[in-house]
Length: 263
Ligand SMILES: N[C@@H](CCC(=O)N[C@@H](CS)C(=O)NCC(=O)O)C(=O)O
Image (cartoon, rainbow, N blue to C red; front, side, top):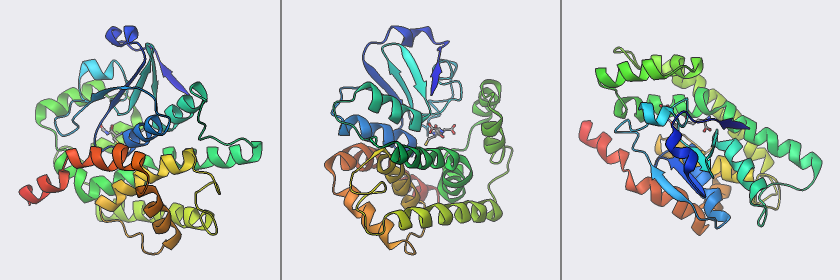
């Protein structure tokens, strides 16, 4: 669990649950979804990634990687969306989305770890190749500030791929697609004869992976080889909480419309 002592002292006095998040971010969406599934009250601090509101001294003082989401609970900062899911599920146990049995727990942890590990090489790379790199181009001033603030080597390597006139290549995208095909084949297999990824119960695994599918659909990822995944996603979309936390938030930030304008 990544708990941060924020250098931005302002957040240390925040009471209750405060989420720093962004409308289109799948990592943010999974946390919004769990908050809503648990019917928890939370205060929204929405950052516009198009306006680079995450690239500021103030926000790096909350999440030192400059990423959304970041949860502040009574002044304590927790980053990494899948860690936030586990933290919320354990801290507010009235309605649990974790699993009771020890061997199920290891399986759930594996799904959450895959969700974290594949974010940069698969989901983020695919989306930046398809649309985000074009939409999230930084001005020179934003570049300068980003390279000053960002210390994380993986993020420096990732964002270095689309700065200084460079962009993601079709080889980058092909490697991402291979990883995505691999993990969605595993999810498809897990869903054979089951409604949800962990079996009969809707769990943190579904909450983690569902919003990633929404994001990948917007980038045009082909899910047709995975019929069980498609059926599972239809079931997720029937949940009012999923509609509110994932779909409606995304609608507010209509990036597709912006891309059409640019193109
Ligand atoms: N492993 C992190 C990834 C967070 C992440 O990459 N968030 C994206 C939005 S989904 C973001 O903040 N992008 C802005 C950037 O990369 O500068 C998590 O799960 O919280």
